Amino acid sequence: MDFANGDIVKILSSIWAQIEIFLNSMVLPSRLWQFGIIAACFALAHLGRIWLAPKVDDWGRRRELSTRQLRWLILLRKRLRGFLFIVFAWASVFVLEATKGFYSWRFLVVLAATLVTAWLVVGLVARLIRNALLRGIVRWGAWIWVTLYYLGLWDETVRLLNGTAVEFGDFRITAYGVLKALVLTTILLSVARIISGQTSARLRTNEDISPSMSELVIKVMQVLLYGAALFIGIKAVGFDLTGLAVLSGAIGVGLGFGLQKVVSNLVSGVIILLDKSIKPGDVISLGETFGWINSLGARYVSVVTRDGKEYLIPNEDLITGQVVNWSHSNEFVRIDLPFGTSYHDDPHLVRKLAVEAAQSVNRVLKNRPTVCHVTGFGNSSIDYLLRFWITDPVEGLTNVRGQVFLALWDTFKANGISIPFPQREVRVLEGSQLDLQQAPETHSENSPQEN
Image (cartoon, rainbow, N blue to C red; front, side):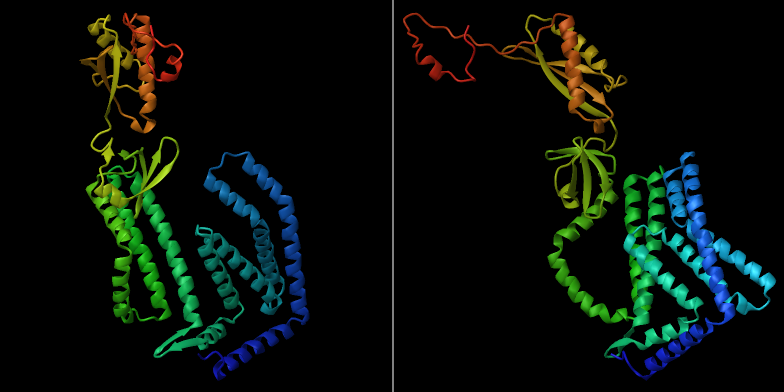
């Protein structure tokens, strides 16, 4: 490790000498005059912000702005003082250029206006990065670089960082290389995320590409973009990746045994996307879970149920288990509804009324036949099976069954059709005795009704 050698001391001495020269020049009348101009520009920008901010708020309230426009308006309001300072500072530069021919009379004003402009631009561009940590790394790194560059200290800073290094045999890693790799990787990851997000949104809205294929393309694109960003970032440090071949092979074997389930779920996710067995929006049943596919992940599938719960089902379970896909090949779903009526009622009339009752429910399809069949003669009723079709299982099955049951009840009641319930008669034969004192003890809540 060579943190303190002769070259670093010379670099630090050179930087300090430039700082001393700069500080000594600040006491000149022309420099003091420019400090006053900069302070006046800041005061005017502060007063202008106090006066202009409420007007910007009123302007935004009077207009119907989208969420993105509202965010940019809030961002502009927060940086209003910086915008006003840039306007006043560059206006002062033009005035000084017209009245004072020497550049030394406007040097500090130009430097202040340039730095604030660069800082403001960096802050606005960094807002495109959604991740707060990545945004902070890019913003602060760019601010430091801009400041050192315009102060003329960037070359000395690079030499100083290159002189600060750690050596491992023939491999030497410098502080400048680490910082460059960190900033470069962050920028590349941010760009990859922006490209991935924009492309994913377009692929998901493209009707010519199936949902399964679009998800597969999105996953492959994300792996390639993020992998390339990390690879370029590591190469920027100067690290030789070929030396990791043997080590990565040994680590890969160990991880293969330890992460069998993870790999199995990843491979199962790719198979699901390729065979298009399920896709976002499909309504599925898996065991006691009934809901619709919200998203397909690399490791799991998100299933949202009617009660608002979100189940994260591993991809392997969808490949190896039995899954009922209610909307795999088409959107039509048939529902069977059993019921029974009394033996005194005409079964032909019952079937006709049952079909009409089902057709009166809004969610029941009219263009697909609703049928009612006699399925048997029960102990106390004639048993029927009513079959009808719907196309929106995602809206629920229990509620549509309940609506059809209510329609049957209203129709049967209006036409005198009775729905029987089981009854039992208990007869006491001649010559037998009934012990009334023990009867309550032998009867239970589920005992048959005595007539």
